[in-house]
Length: 588
Image (cartoon, rainbow, N blue to C red):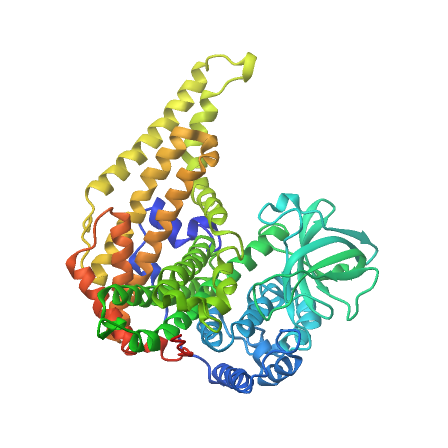
């Protein structure tokens, strides 16, 4: 029996390699929000609304003002994730992720501050890996907002390649002397608390650092003209023998500091999807008055099928993001590793925003999208940047494939290759009888697995049955996930260890697994929705991915569902965008 945090326990991994996972593994759980938590959320939203209405949310430097930070601290905002024992409210991910979406609709930078503080940053790190002593000492200033947090991994010479990290923490008695440089660190600066991935005695470790209130020869920041995120501090950090308590090193029972960083990234990637759900709502809100007022050939453009199709697609992506957030948050709260799930959520959400920005926002507003004050012009960098946050999407997808294929390759194919290998290069010789016998046993085991998979594939009950029934759509998606096993195994068998260099093939396989996952999750989510338009939006999203994965064309029914949904969005009848700003329509 695998532990819940191991890769093999992932619902995605099991759906592909075991064929024994049930549809319920892809459900999100309904939860009652504690009154104390909801009260903090309502107070925090009210604070930000007030400052936004007064146009005083940002200071002269363009960042969220200290007055806003202080009022949010009084509301309890900064301690939502922290345990009550340390001054917080103990909200879990299932509560926090939808709230992040709510906050994005009012002020994306304030939502991003919480992500840096509690999801990928020091509160989340301490709650997951901190000792009682570390929590007692370091959490209260964070929970009360006296300190804000950041996550520091990227360096000038490395981003995804953590083997190239050069920041060192040299042991010196009961302290560490930190030297090195970090780059692109959001929400960092004097007086902040950061989680720093560095090397201690050549071992990757995660160290919490309470940065000094003032810069000096041991600590300074580097500024640069970064466009995204707007209204957020983002600096480089330079250390030169900065003293840090050795007691601030976090330890994971499942690896070194990289395991801690991966956990943080999984939480952060889920937050990116939650932010994407908010940004998609913002885009929809900005379009509604435009499609109602803009007229061509005697009718509003919202009456045109082309525009309705765009708005229907947008509604489907909103519901799919909501579904992914709810599902991944449940898994994280239950203790799952969440690697495949959070990567899929992050990529899906950020790519949806990117596509919506260009194919819906820009094309529907036309040339007016380039006018000053339009959402496209004012937020272009912020709308596109999430595709490279927490790892550029295609690079992260390659890593997704490696994790997905590793166990199968080690169990079946690596033993065959090892048994057939005797000597290397000039010393290589034909394998001996014992090697052939061992290889034969492994080949037989692999052959039995292949036959079983082929039988499962042939007996698929929902094969290519793309109807408007979310139950059947979920069944199709689960079969499509299971069918990925044969394709991935064939790639491993054909290319062996060099499959990692076949990046185009690897990316395509992993991307289709991600699409099937989203299709399955949103189908299950749609099945339980009481709002008929939300249900319809989930079905439209599932049909879109089903058509892609089965290389089929959308049916007439799919087009009708999509355009009817888009009509409802254009007429402002889609409840999920009710809270989004309608903005100003610049007719020019």
